Image (cartoon, rainbow, N blue to C red; front, side):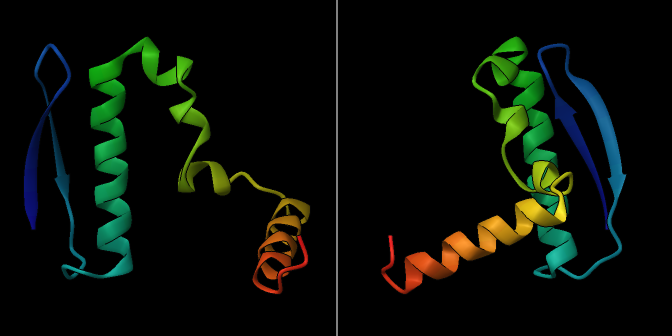
Length: 83
């Protein structure tokens, strides 16, 4: 699938090729990243001021094993009603 997207105030054109089936995890991840990029272009500096750059899956890719374990532990304890 080929898609051309118009982004930002200047109307930059970005083209992307996706070869994964609609509804797959990769397809969804691509579209989330695409919308994040559009939001960044539309908001400009506000994107960083509101700390959108510190949210989402892209940030989790920089997590250490300890960060992942702490998050898993917190989620498990929430499910058990320990917090």
